[in-house]
Length: 361
Image (cartoon, rainbow, N blue to C red):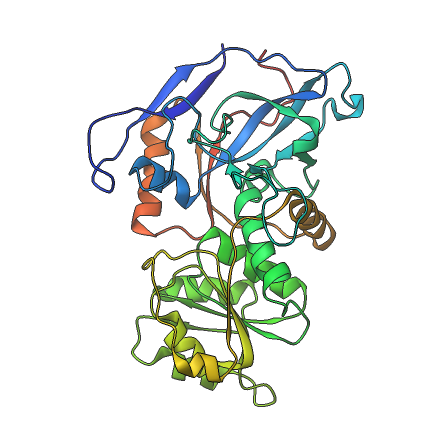
């Protein structure tokens, strides 16, 4: 019988509680007319999963399997589904409710992300899933199962932030990516490099800065250094001595730094605020025509475009660590510890099944 990982409910206040992981048996799914049955081979963690375990994310569910990222093989198709899906390796779309609008989700209730909440009944921390055939993309053939699972949520978030929102995803532009080491930041780095941009990064770890430079970053700076923005400015090319756009997931004091780095009319794209839920907005930013643009996840169209770009450019998402076995709860917990410590460089992945296409049903 298939199994899934959910959270176990225990008493505790938001931010103080830490819900244990629980492995439970689930019913074997049957496909509807346009559904696919997908045996999940690999699934990946995101920061939202860690927040869910602390009750710091909306609408936590103790019935819905965790995780939004999944890669697997189609083992059965519904009566009206395209039969060519059978046997193909696919990656699941990580959200629902947003088709193609560039402004935001068409659904009046907003976007629903897979994994661990009451807003969407599906999660990828399970052996097998049933999904509509329109909610998968064929996995790029050059990716390993772990790399394919590492792509969906952070890849989509990074693609929208850089390509749709920044208006600076072009050759020769100077892009600053903060907090390198996280999945979104690394995806943005890879996408921007593939588009010909010059990418600069920040981190509190010299090791992460060095790894980013090995991947192709033009420069980088430790944000724990006083006046780091002045030091970063010295690294910029003389013929373009400014940053065109900042892709930021931290928040905090980034705006005070941004005004010293950005060109007039430069853009800050904010996809997260891990340092703090508020930031300062100064008159200096107003006078410099700086734009602050919020960005979160992305549409089904953007997901399709992102996967096609990864396939075309042969981009390989960075995987920090892989744990084998859905029932290996003790080791899976250590992946969450990596997020807590901020020690990962890339995505954290659970290998649920080996590379064979044999059905678990």
